[in-house]
Image (cartoon, rainbow, N blue to C red; front, side, top):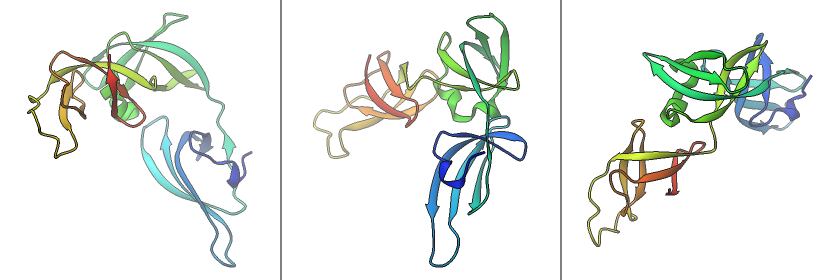
Length: 185
C-alpha cells in the first residue's frame, strides 16, 4: 500500500478497482488542517482524466503493471493495431484510451506496452519520434520578430512550432512528452 507521500508523477495506482497513472500531484498542508494531495489521474483502461484529492491517512494500492514491447501496425477507424514483438500476437487499443498519443504513431514505431491482469491496456511511446513535415509555410527572410518560428503540420496531423528553415518533406524529431520540436533528423 502507498501512503499519500508515495504518490508521485508517473506512479501507477489502483483506485476504484481500476489502474490509474498519476499525471500531476500537489501536496499541501494548510494550518491545523490535515495534509492533502491533489492529483490528476489518467484511467489506463478508458483514457479518462480526473482530478482527485487524497486525504491525510488515505492509502492506495500500487498497480502491478508489466511492460512488454510492441510495434505499431496501422489504424482502422478509431482502433489502433499493434503487434507484440515477442509472441507476434496482435491487439488493438481505441482512440479514447490512447488520447493525444495517436499523433505520434507512425507505422513501424516500437514502443512499450502496459499490461494489467495479463492484457494490454495502454502504450508508452518513445520519448522522441521522427516525423515528416507535410505542410510548412515559407520562411520569410528577416521575419524573427515572432521568435523565429512557424507552425508546421506533420504526417500524423500534429501541428508544432518549428524553426523558419524547416520545409516540406524534412524529417524532424519531436519530444512526445512535451509535443515540441527537438531537431532535424
